[in-house]
Image 1 (spheres, protein in one colour):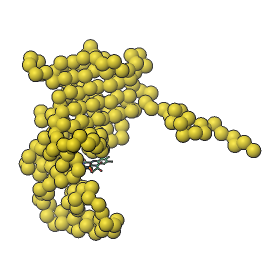
Image 2 (cartoon, protein in one colour):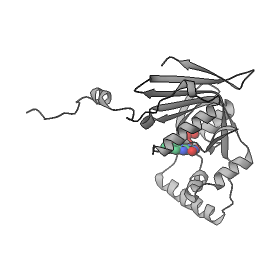
Image 3 (cartoon, rainbow, N blue to C red):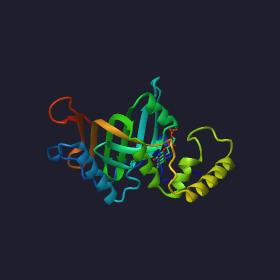
Image 4 (cartoon, rainbow, N blue to C red):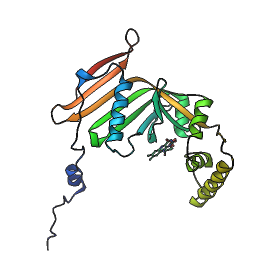
Amino acid sequence: MTQPTDRPTTLRDRLRALPVLGEDRPGLDPGRAPEDPVELFVAWLEDAIDAGVRAPHAATLSTADAGGRVDARTLLLQDVGPDGWVFATRADSPKGRALAQNPNAALTFLWPERARQVRVRGAAVPLGPRASAADVLARSDPSRATALAGPQSAPLPSAAAYREAWDAALERVRGEPDLVLDVWTAYALEATSVEFWASSPSHGQVRLRYDAARTGPRWSRELLWP
Ligand SMILES: Cc1cc2nc3c(=O)[nH]c(=O)nc-3n(C[C@H](O)[C@H](O)[C@H](O)COP(=O)(O)O)c2cc1C
C-alpha cells in the first residue's frame, strides 16, 4: 500500500523544497547607501530588531590560528561603535587563543526574514580590562556564572561536574557583585571590509562591499557579482 504523502520523500528533496527567505524584503539600494558601513549596519540591525527577527545580534565568528586551522562559532554582538564590532568571550577559550595567535577574523550576520546578510572582516583586538570588566558586570548572574564556572571548551568529566561548578559560581557571583573575571575579554573587530547582501523581488540579489582605504576617504565602495 502506498502512503498518501505530499511531503518530499528524500532529504535532498526536502531540503530543496524549504523556503529560505522571508516574504518581506526591503532590499538594498546602492545609490542611497551611506558613506560609512557602520551606519548601514546599524540601520539593518535595527530593522531586524524592529521586524522581530530572533537573535538579530547573533553572528558567526570565524577565526584561524597560527597554523591556518579555521574554526567558527556563534556569539552575540555586544555593541558597534568607533572601536568596531564588539563581542566578549574568555581569552583562554579556543577562539581567544586563536585570536591571540592571529587577530584576523570575520563576523557573519544572517537575517533570513529580511533577506539580508552582512560579512565583516578585520582584526579582532582585546579592548582592555576596563571594557572587559564593564561587559561582565553588565551581565546577568547566570551569564556571569557560566563565564566563571570553568575553562570554556575544555573536556568536562560529567554533566554533574558542570552543574556543581555552575551552582558554586552562581553563589559566588551573587555574593560578590563586583567580581571581575581576568580571562573574560571584550574584543573589537576593526573592520577592513564590510559586505552587505540583500535579495528583493524588484532587484534580485545585490552585493555592496565597503573596503577601508589606505589613503583618502575612509571607505571605498563597489558592487559585486552575486
Ligand atoms: C546564540 C548563541 C550565543 C552565544 N554567545 C556567546 C558569546 O557571546 N560569547 C561566548 O563566548 N560564547 C557564546 N556562545 C557559545 C559559542 O558558540 C561557543 O560554543 C563557545 O564560545 C566556545 O567556542 P570556542 O571553543 O570556539 O572558543 C553562544 C552560542 C550560541 C548558540
